[in-house]
Structures are given as structure tokens and as C-alpha cells.
Image (cartoon, rainbow, N blue to C red):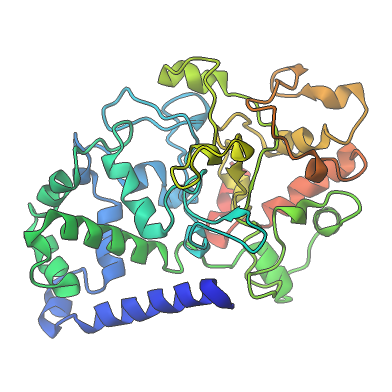
Length: 391
């Protein structure tokens, strides 16, 4: 790991060590929140930090379901139900696994936007992201930071832990209380529970398991620059250049021609022809028309158990996603049909900025190769979530 990424991780580790050093013997002995991460875990699961006390971070990022939304309270889980019991957003809640490894939102050496949290990068850091849902009216619905701080102050054990980790005056200022809460949640999300690197693929790299013939074919195709070029956007190396530790994303932004999700729009009341401008809607980007319709390349870790797919959850099956990409390279009439609808692939939501240079990269794939790619992507599932592959 080098550069800003390594500096960020080292700074986070140092901050965690400093905070942990503040823990008194009495706190460690009498309070379950013996570290900032433990406090963050409690906050992550606390529904009292929502307006109606019904929703926590874990509601839409379920620990048992790869930290994704699999509540099955509505069709397909494309968008999540809010604390008020009636509001829905317009984007899919992604898995929170490996999110801690995302670099801060910035421009790279070529001037391209990279990193940040959420589909459009509008939260630069993990701490920024943790502060978003509590104040979002269609999510947890709290009025402001003061309201969140008041809920935290209802619990004596929280107060004790906050003062131990973040200073004696932390509860006197709602802004400080809120910032401390987001810091604690981010500390929890930086623990190995979110980024264990113990999938079948990781074990394969360590020589602990062998791939099936189908999985090996899928791996070869995924890494190939001749057949798929998947690694153009889903990097197959970690940021320090090693194969081990890859998150399978470049953290860059692209418009790949994803269509609207009409079912989600019916749920959330948005107009069917509304445009989600993606990166262009990020306040830091300033509406740049060149960024219209671009969304951050997601990590493929746990992708097989965190359906539905794309920024708006428009596709329910992983094979459909691969067929969607394949349509750009196949001349077959059958490949121009969405198997989930039986109709031609719907038009892109934003059609003026599609990155065809990266999408039109090779030959169309036959069923055997498409199935092999699915098989390989399934190997990226963390060990604890592997039972979900059978459901």
C-alpha cells in the first residue's frame, strides 16, 4: 500500500490506538464498549438513532446477509424502506463489506474522480458516510445532529464511553457528539468482520482449495484482456499491486447505460422519467455534464449474495448483469433480450455519456462462458456468507 491510501489506513490505525489508550481500567471492566469499534458496533445496531426508533444501520446493511438489504419487505429489495414505514429511496443499498478500503473522494493524476462513499461519492470518507442515513428524511429521518445527540445522551453507558474515547466535553456539543458517533461507527466498519479476505478465491490464492474446472474458466475469462476486460473497471490487484487483497474495483466512475428501474420509481413516487445524474449530482463535482450518469464501480466482493444489482437494483440475477454487459459485444438477437423481462434491454437512463470504449471490448460470450463467469464471481463470497449461496 502506498501514497494517500496507505496514509489513510495508518492514520486510522493510529487514531484507533490512541482512542483505545484512553480507555480506563474501570471502563474496560464495567462497560461492554471497551473500544471505539465496540461502541460503533452498538451504534450500528441501535434503532433509537432513527426518528421512530425502528431503524438502524443494520436494518439496511444486515450483518447476516453480507451487510446488504435483504429484508424482503418489498419487491426485490431494489430500494430500502425508511424509518417512517412508507418512504423509499431511489438507489440500492450496497453491501458495506470492504467499504472501509475505499479511498477518499479525489481526482487521480488523469483528472478522473475516484473513491468516496455512496454510489456518487458525495461522502468522501467512511465517517462522512456514517453521518448520512441518520439525517436522511427517507432513511432514519432524524431532524438534525442535535436530535441524534439527544438520543445518545439517553443512555448512561453511551455517555461514559463517549467521554472516555472522545473527551469529557464531547456530550456538551451536539456537533461533537455526532462526529464522535460517526467516528465510532467507522471504527466498527474497519474491523475484520467487514473485510476478512477469506473467500474461496482468497483460499485459492493461498493454495488451500482448488477451483472447479468451471470456476477456473471463469477466473481466466475475468482476468482476460481478450475476452472480457472486466479488470478495466474491477481491478484484480490490491492498491499496492499485489493480487492478494484485491477488492475488485478501481473506485472510478462510469456510465455503462443502466436503464431506469420503473418498479423502484413506483415505490418511491418519483416520476418515471426522472434522471439520476449520478456523479454529476455530487455537490463536489458541480453538475459537470461530462459526469452525467456515472456511478462508482462497486466491489465484487460478496456480489453473489447481495442482489439486486446496479445502482438502482434494476437487475435481480447475477447472470443478468453479465448478459447486460455481453449485449454490447454480441450480434445475436437473443442477446438483446433481458431474460428477466422477456423484452429488449430497456434504454439507458442517461444515454449521452456511455463509455462504449470500455464496454465494447471483445467477442460475445456463449452460455458456457457466461455461466463460468458467474461461478467465478461466487468464489468472491466471504466464508461466513457462503451458506447464502445455496439459498
